[in-house]
Image (tube, rainbow, N blue to C red):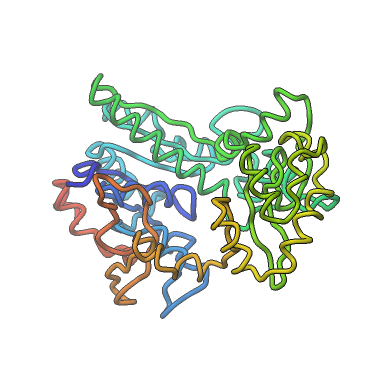
Length: 382
């Protein structure tokens, strides 16, 4: 039995943060009723496409049932409210205030269903001066401090390659929902959760917080090396780059011996992690005088043989297609009505050695209306 078996969720979300949240819940066994407008979730119309099916929609809506309702139509709105009265969780990511105006706000739905866990996901939260700013991942990355501390040394700020604000907000939303469900089992009362992409991403910037709040410094852009520890980054080889992660004095002494410079371990410039960071250019030159004579494969073999953390830089195909990823089941094919089998990346946590993942891929638009209404005792409306 999966951890969330028996939990029913009304999913009013679209695009990424909300659907990612509910996909994680679906993996753990929750029944997700995805309410979509007549044209469907926006992600159904965003590529890349395979056989007419959106890859982004398919990946982020696995294990759900689809019900089409037009919330501007009184009968459909009433049906949505009836469903909310029969579920354990409602998740929405409308602009702040929109759900309440529609008649699907937390106060309205929890008055009818006091055990309801109601989760709102937005860009900047349900209150505060920024609550009405556009909830785009790029906007949140720009304002959170993440972009300012990301980029090459001497270069401009950079966003990450993925929509991290959306994904982290979805992750925290699923975490908060499960905590609220545990508390409900203890107290009998539901909860109203306010998850902001801004808050969620800001909370993850631990190194930046250490520099700003404790050292009184603004994080500098340092490219692929660590801002506080050295050598902890990328180093050139004869055919690419190798990642080396050295943190303590014992590891550094081992590295110094390996690269043919044992005296570096006693050099005052490299005596501590802090001084090594202060003298990073000199230390990098010393290491690359060794690493550039080797291929990436040979450099990794030498470093690993000495017990030092090292790695190649892989693309997504290499990350997904290696034997370890296969053994860990990182990509799971799920049955799909159009694609036959849809490759899916499910939640990563193993429970007693098992990795729960949804049994089915994303639903076709509106395909589950009869099933949903019958299971909720609302079949007379079908």
